[in-house]
Image (cartoon, rainbow, N blue to C red; front, side, top):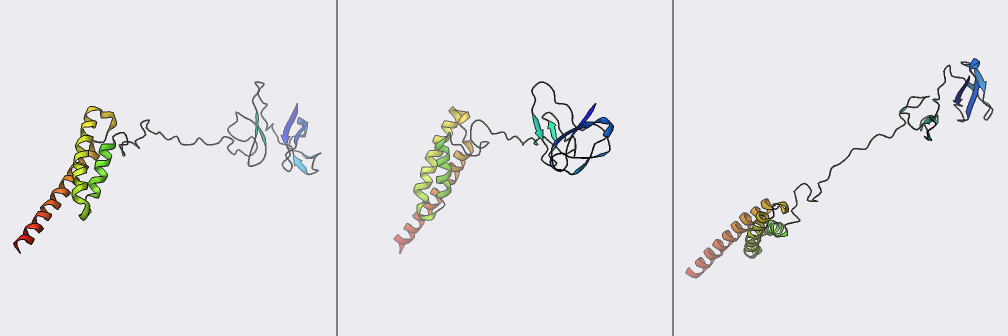
Amino acid sequence: MNLEFDCAHCNQHLSVESSAAGQPVKCPACGNAVTVPAAPLRIPLPQTGAGIIYCTRCGQRNAESDLKCSRCSSSLQIAAQPQYVVSGDGTMGGLIPYKNPKALWAYYLGVFSLIPCFGIPLGVAALVLGIKGLKVSALQPERGGKAHAWIGIVLGGLCAAVYIVALVAVAILAWRH
């Protein structure tokens, strides 16, 4: 029986008599001395047409189905990459209700209604769009957006009301003087 192995210096595939196990032999390709392994390191490839892969650490030829290198025992298989699950609706897990644009607009207009000079028109628009966004969400729950609509209604309505009261108070004070 022959022992098959690869030269540690040039990776040339070598085959020697099993009686040479443990003995140094001269590689015919590079001329360096190589110790013949005591047992066959190479597992015969299956005859099913499986391929050969080379160890990236030592260059040893291995069967494609091997998990570890037969020479240096380093891993031959690429580690499985983590799998990420993305929801099919594309809403980033429900964070952005892009399927209910009225609710989304109500939310943004409600936030921007905090700006003093623009608070009244933006607040009123947020209030109206928030109510419409809630109706859409009630009729088609898969479109989402309830929270965004409510934030638009509350924030927009509150800002509009506060700015209207402040505007009326300033007008009354100006009229008295």
